Image 1: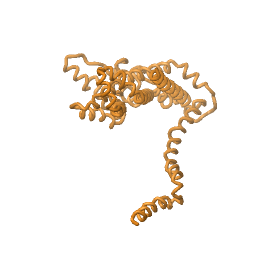
Image 2: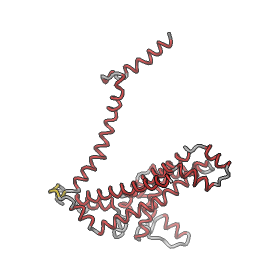
Image 3: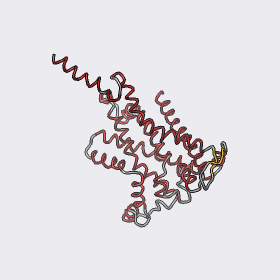
Image 4: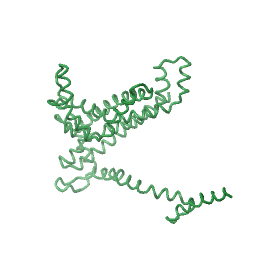
Length: 313
């Protein structure tokens, strides 16, 4: 009696749960789809629609004063953009950012994740220090590092002078400026990569390491033959996210160097920004953004293909 009454009491809400929407209990998938519609609408409105608009704008010419489309020009915007030496430099600097950020972020994040996974003393402090950077926005982080990089009153040069070392032109010299932006970006984003690697490490069964220890495998062999292959999905994800972040890097560059000195830190994202808002050329800006998207697809696709081929050997 009690079981039937409990079934009735528990079943009634299940049948009547969707009555206020005019749906039966069997119509739950319809309700689920209805609940997804706002998210899908936002995705279409803020992700796919701008891509379509950008593609259309890249094929049109615009009045530089009214910013209104004045006619279709086909691939003329792409031809003009690809002929500009400044765009060639922006592509090169974009690749430099991608290579340097990946080369520093992945080993550093993997090392920090391994340290945290070992649960040694001090790992709590390391976790808090690394993850604290994720809580700050790009603009705030860039402003803080801008003060630290200041040639006369910056913290970094003050430390160098204290150690009787020469002060460095972090944001004045072209080579120093690129490295300075990379260091700030790695500091800001390494925490996310570390979390992904840490999740991958914690998903590896302990029995695998126990079997390797019984076989007498060294620490390096365990890492090379067991840990790294099992972390391949995490490595692919981190490489993808870091590549996207390095390609679209624009806020820190605007705050730290404004693309200087002499355009030496201008990447494709900042080039597109300048074309749209400084030179009043929406067509060129859209064409350069499309080129940046194609480069990003080529980079991420090539990375995934390379790692999967290596994993199959």
